[in-house]
Image 1: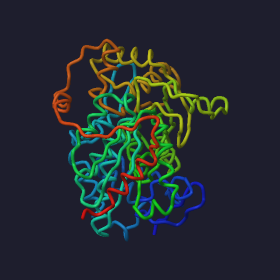
Image 2 (image 1 turned 90 degrees about the vertical axis):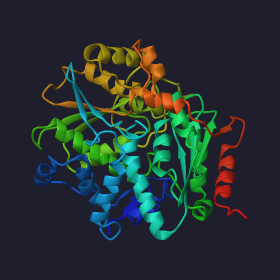
Image 3 (image 1 turned 30 degrees about the vertical axis):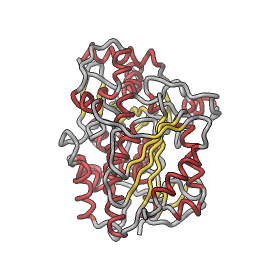
Image 4 (image 1 turned 180 degrees about the vertical axis):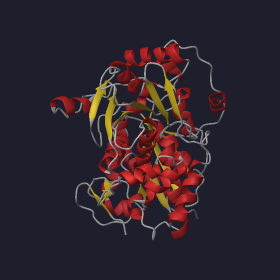
Length: 431
């Protein structure tokens, strides 16, 4: 059996299934494997030519015991997870001028890299809940893309309800609509008057209340959920294989990030033996950069809204090398990439590309690839700010015509109490 423990040491030796449904560990930590599997060069060579789906099966199977999910079942779950992606390769690579290479992770149903992991998480939830005939309530705080990807992964499932809090007025309109237009009975959306960090502070007490969490079977699929981190490991290996001609040479991977959950996956990939160098590209909400450069891990008084709202976060899960990018640089980078390539990048991706532009001559022998975290179709405001001719995507037009459903949370209200009452109502049988 492959076991998992909390990073804070208060929870130990739990199965993958238990880790999947834990969300926040009871001690407030993150669930991670007790041991990280190592991958030798022979295995790396064998994996080089695999499809994204087959590579995911091989990597994920290293972390899940066959007694929990037999490999044949795992292969089917992963195949189902990616069946709705708009391109068969799941994560195509775009090679642009000025030595810019981009791994496109936005071809899932909500046009964000979150779909790549979340679609698998939804399959795992359905797999275990259907076998156990047990209901779970997922609680998610989102800066934008996480919420819509989580909703899409579990919408309509019999044994799961999902409660999502989004920061009202701080998401792109398209991000919000991808959540508020989902009308399935098991989906519950709140728009909160605050930042993503404010939302997380309201959610965490629910998970720290052991009796409440256990009674209502609460779980979360934010970046702290081990299953998401585990699946995200796959795209680091996939990116590496696309950039390296052998399995010895290093590759630099530039990752736009907020809470750094994605970077956690990259760090684990490195621990497994993948020769990668990770760069964390952040907005002016630069706690990660400050912590690395000067040891300053203090929170600013406010979170500054930027053109990359999913990255407007100060409470991070993990840190690595960081590069700070302003909104002006974001828009100028978007404009430059468009002028050079007739290729549109979202504002989050532009933060990574800006680093690539500024460091083009640095270590030219090391190939570099930037993670594209979302489709530009979701960010009309940023595209307009960059002065790029805008033709609205047909998917956006359809989305904007759909009815919406949500509840608002005001700043003077007790958000944790509102959530408690909602969760109790969800789990109270109708007479």
